[in-house]
Length: 360
Image 1: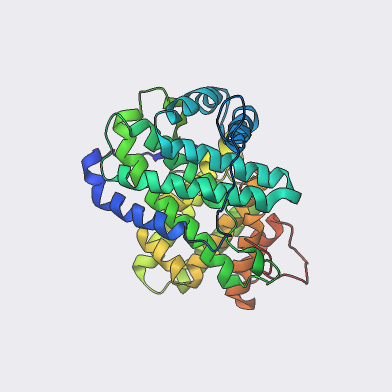
Image 2 (image 1 turned 90 degrees about the vertical axis):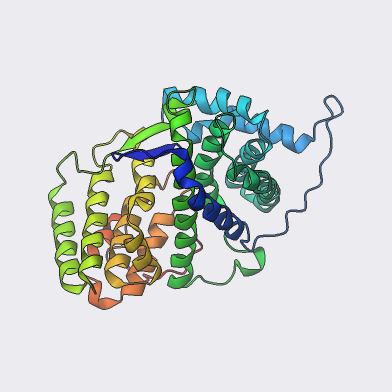
């Protein structure tokens, strides 16, 4: 993971304080997911006096998890060495690292997944408790750690299960799936404000490899089927938008989707580009998603098809597929032809059992 920066003007840190306070509230809301209470028994290692769980988590992070966060060789150095070194001086970052490591282990060890999820929530809760007051006073001294932890939150937000063991047998409705992705995007949009507040202090420092400029204009031609699908969706947006403002912002969101579509990107760039889209769309368009306006849901479904390109990333998994399924169900038969490309992209063409009944 990394901070994203579109090709726009930079703002000074002081301009972001009101928005950062809002981000603190979003963190509070996000931590209230109905997961099991994070009651964790810790046993100290006889040799070090450090809880053995934390030793296990840090070892796993340093030998495995860090590679799943990296965007390439230059970032490997940051995630493997610089991030743990920063964490030694900032409790919120240390707990954030341990939470990510535990979530990774939950993914790798399904038979022990709930055990590691509980540990992850324990450390995530502590991370947020330590992080919240820091948001009120970001300084050059803590900006690097704040930037790193804010970047980690995208991974954590996708990886944390959003249902309790008592509800895992119950099917999710399309609205459930939509609300889960809205929760994640809301947090990510708030976190971007924090990243921007730190930008001036960290852009030329040790974590510079984490800075990624995201294109806002297409840099390559689309394949014929992709171009045809987007043209069809553009036409539908023009006919069905409830207002000129929504039409303008929806077309901009679709243009951004064209720009970040990783059809010619290196595999290590795909994660950066795809994860940037929810942050870069306008507030008007994001509100339209929250209001379930059809043109916004259709574009979100197309984003789900692109997100499916990250199906092999452990903390993303099949969320792109689930999002396409949910958006298709919410839109109904009238949008079937328009959504055909997105469904085919995730392997749903001709599937009579289409329905968003999976867990997000």
